[in-house]
Image (cartoon, rainbow, N blue to C red; front, side, top):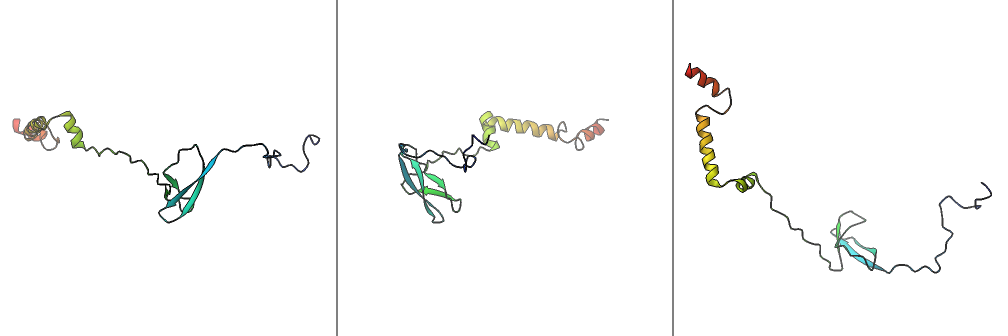
Length: 126
């Protein structure tokens, strides 16, 4: 094994290839500015889509592009309440009728907590 290794070479430490004849991809510097006032640049490919936001390497805050690229506004749906979902299934007239029916059953002792109505109704019948 000692015959096959190069003296002084570290395991995976450095490449013996030189950079002659290699054409690097075209690059550009994109500037960003965070809310804390930190100004920094990121190297990107010329072909890359430039993001409007980037994380600041100093403070971690969100930084906006100095090139005037605006972030896309996300369309947010309004929060649906229980009442909104209920109105998708029934009309207000139907809901009023159901409420009236349930109140009559509750007042008549047919529905509701057992300790309030059902025991009392049996006593009255006997």
